[in-house]
Length: 261
Image 1 (spheres, rainbow, N blue to C red):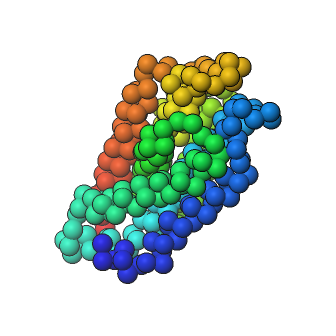
Image 2 (cartoon, rainbow, N blue to C red):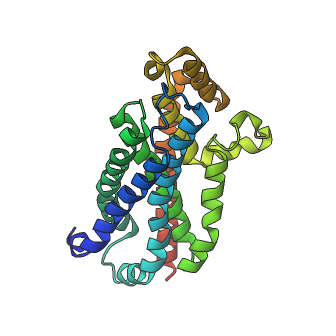
Image 3 (cartoon, one colour):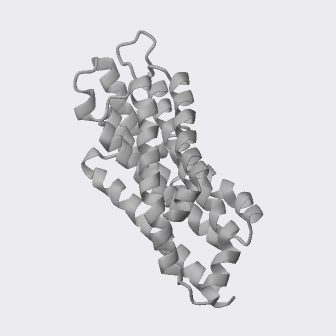
């Protein structure tokens, strides 16, 4: 905690940058969720929601992708002197990361929710956004632990982010992806985060008082992404499972590398 406080400029930047960036997004997508506007389109509404989710993924994952390759020498030296182990190292990092990312998620939705004209629960959207970011960050953390240096981590970054974008459901409907490739969606946290955001924004409870054409188009968004509203909890469990699995794998990788140091 003391280290975080001493690095106040970095802390401020990590919170201020998402706020300003998402204000910029919100101005581009200004009023995109106003279902009563004459120029309203469901795809633009969905596009605004997807853009916020994609931005959150990059916001959460990129710092962790490079953090460990930069801290590797310090960790290995202190691990070799038995100052601490891999598990305490990750736990201490997580104690800082979790509240900081939650605050960043809150500021993100403060910036976009009313300007874009979203309709779903603000609290629900913030929590889903936070959990999606944690899962994406866990994936990046594992890659950062596997990478030998920051340059390697940067080179493999597209392998993390591009599949996430393709399986998000905006650029191509899930049902149009070849069946033999759909298994990859189970490793893409963004897909499940967007599923939950779609249900929050376009679900029955939210769209009950919308004009009928907009209600039908909203249901079409849910259908084309192959989302079953009754099994929303499955998406939540997948996000939690991906977070635990990737962080657990990162601990194992880190322990093996440190033991051979």
